Image 1 (cartoon, rainbow, N blue to C red):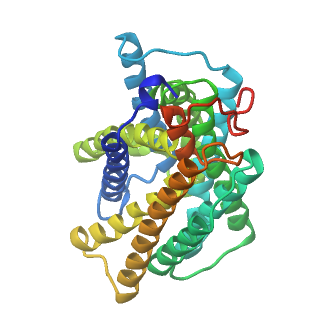
Image 2 (image 1 turned 135 degrees about the vertical axis):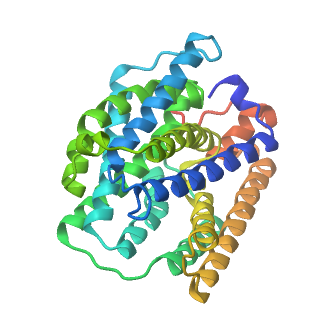
Amino acid sequence: MTESEKKVSPVSDVGAWAMNVISSVGIIMANKQLMSANGYSFTFATTLTGFHFAVTALVGFVSNSTGYTSSKHVPLWELLWFSIVANMSITGMNLSLMLNSVGFYQISKLSMIPVVCVMEWILHNKRYSKEVKVAVVVVVIGVGVCTVTDVKVNAKGFICACVAVLATSLQQISIGSLQKKYSIGAFELLSKTAPIQALSLLVLGPFIDYYLSGNLISNYMKTISSGAIIFILISCSLAVFCNISQYLCIGRFSAVSFQVLGHMKTVCVLTLGWLLFDSELTFKNIAGMLVAVAGMVIYSWAVEVEKAATKSLPHSKHSLTEEELNLLKDGLEKGPIRDPEFGESK
């Protein structure tokens, strides 16, 4: 993480979260209009993601060219490896949604929180307090109650869901670790990975989308309406903010925090769907959302408890969360600290 990103204020942290929630919810609403049968029937989700990363790459190129951001060296093999994992996440999610019921798809997304916890424990020897574990369970139960309906699964769908969950979890952990390993800012890292993802998704996307929908994007583009073009541009614009804020949030906090608090987006999407698209909002949905919000509040409190414990035991040798490491790097800890999460060149 760069020096400027190390010295972040609570206001900028809140701004990063707000940017992520607003842009993510906005892009879901825009894509709903773009892809629905009642909208513009643009069924090419993987190719659209390629458009997203192409615009993000363009913004990164302009930023680097004008000197607004600097470009630090990251080995090409690491960028390629990360892009492969990220693209497996995108493709796996699309295939999982197609092959499984919406209920099982939601369960697979919820499973990312415990999967991220286990992977960080295996890869970084990270430990979690009892309060954090309780908060994670409450959030998973709450979001599960308000989103999971019918649950049907088959062998192909299950495999795709497993690949999607593992790839997404590994991708989000890697975002934070790459920023630390090469002392690179969130937008700098994104500007390096976006061109690779854009190129690969724009090449493979049409074939994947044809397999998923049975439609050729070339045929759709021949008769595309101005309204569809406008919503594609809106979706791409929001994707830039969504991608930047994701890298910012994970870099400043952790992949677990991003997953837990990120479920606020699910609550927002359900609420906006009820307000804007006349979606049904039942007592079960409302109860689940309240439980999920309560879990997020507990999680935030648990993180503060861990921070307080770090301050009271400044010389203890234990596995630290990324939030605590940021505090230590800000100068709250005077002595030199060497943590396995950074390693020699993590």
